[in-house]
Structure formats: C-alpha cells, structure tokens
Amino acid sequence: MRVLVTGGAGFIGSHLVDSLMLDGDSEVVVLDNLSSGGLHNLARWKDDARFRFVRGDLKNKDDLGRSLEEVEFVYHLAANPEVRVGETDPSIHFDENLVATFNLLEEMRRRKVGKIVFSSTSTVYGETAVLPTPEEYGPVLPISTYGASKLGCEALISSYAYTFGLRGLILRMANIVGGRSMHGAVVDFVRKLRQNPAELEILGDGSQKKSYLHVDDCVSAIRRISDAFLKTASRVDVYNIGSADVVSVGRIGQIVAEEMGLRNVRFKFTGGIDGGRGWLGDVKEMQLSIDKLLRTGWKPRLNGEEAVRVAALEILRDATLS
Image 1 (tube, rainbow, N blue to C red):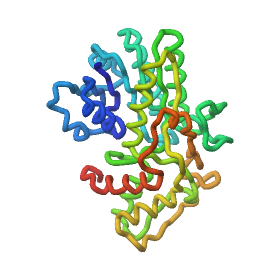
Image 2: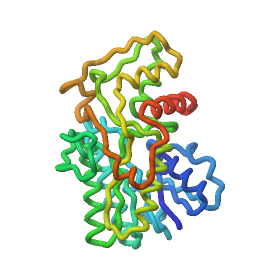
Image 3: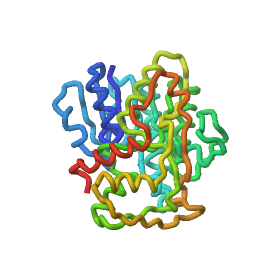
C-alpha cells in the first residue's frame, strides 16, 4: 500500500515514517514544506526505493496532486504546532490547519483516496468538567484558536466522510515529547537552561498539569488504532492518545534541570495570567481518558515523568537544537 504522510519531516511525522518504513509493508510519500521539520529527520530513507519526498505545501494544489498519485491512505500530521501563535496571529492556524485540511480533503475526493488518519489535539476539549476526559465528552469548547482550528478540521473530515464516502480516523493527542521535537515545555526549558544554567523562567504559576506521552508510544498507538480502523466499516471514529497520569510544568523544570546535571537552579515562575495559565488559551489542567485506547491492547511503555525524562535526554543529544 502506498501511503502519504503530510508533515512527515516534522517531529511526530518523521517518527511515524520510520515506523512505516521499518515495517516494509508500505511505500511512503512525504509531503512537507519544511517550515518546522527538517530533511535530516528522514535522511536514513532518502535512497530507499520505497520512499519519496515532495517538498511542497498543502495550500498548493499542484503539490497535493504530485503527492497523492496512487496513494491509498493518508496520515495527516501537517499543521502549525505552536498553540501560542494564535494570540498574535490567528490567521496562521486558520490557513495552516483549516485551509490546508480542506485542500487535502478536496484533492482526496477528486482522486478517490478514501481513508485519512488525522492528528488532532486535546485542546479541542477546552477546559472540561470531567477529568480524565473521554472521547464522548461535550460540548467541546476550545479556548485557543489552535484548538478551534483543529476542531474545525475534525468537522470537515466528518462531513466529507458522510457526504463523499471518505473514512476518517481522528486522534486527539496529549502533549507528545521526545527527540526531534522543536517546541514545547521540555525543549523550551533545555534552551533556557543552556543560556542561563542558574535560573529557569517558567510561564504561569507552575501548577499547570497535563498528560505527557513519549513519541515512540504515540507512534505505536497511531499504528495500532489505524490498523484496527482499517478492519472496520466505521465512517468516522475518534480516539484519545495520551498517558494515564499528569505532570506539572514545575516538575518538568526540575526533571530537565536534573538531566542537565544542574543542582542549584532557581525556578522563576511568572505567575501567569487568568488563574496561573502560561498564556491566553493555555488549558491549565488536561488529562485524557485513554480507556478506549487501552481496550485495543495498547499500553504506554513510559509514564508521564519517565517520558519527560527520556525526552530531555534525547533533546540534549540533538545537535540540531539551538
């Protein structure tokens, strides 16, 4: 089977490409504009006959056409991953998430490519009254433009499934951490402590708690759910992907400092806004219910703190992180 991975040179996408290529069951096409990914993430596959890279943009129909030739299955991971950018320029999330997804679905419809797996986000839920939050929770009321744009993408996929016969698998992901990541708390803290090993500024009051999952566990969950979805007749299905626990942002700072061998770091909390959030649109406490995912037989190899610790070590070894 020939599959397309949009955003396949990025963090999660490149790890998914590795998994697909190592299995040897698929030809893999990657479409990426390299705005947040890098070809170095895919270097091991550049001479493999089963791999093809297209440098292009989902907003360009010609690029989409070249990428979807003879494709049967799409993993759609391309997006602008930075939640905070929505504070200053919400049009970025509209263009890079909603417009890009609409263009992809339209080209899939035109070429009769029938199946898509979409990497959504926990932020679509907003702030919930139920923790851990199950897939059927509602109403879903995002508090960031990032979450809103991802929820809009989910709605587009559902509408194309019921109107045009596509099949869509929606994966709402917690905070994914690990090597090749270029944003998020772990990466930010490594950068800050390299610049000033004596002090670490932490946005918010430090009590923000969220689920953290290592990227290897994330990819294994994607593969498990996708394989199961292909064996069903469901038009649309939704799964949470995360860990069974939470880690506070203050604790992440401590773990990163420990892995960097720094014992006397002063933690400077900014106090945050609106009850201790790091920024406008920051969900202060997030934990996804993963009961549905666990029923597939999947389970994470690492808990939240272990995932953060391993990610810190991987990021510290990453020579491309400046």
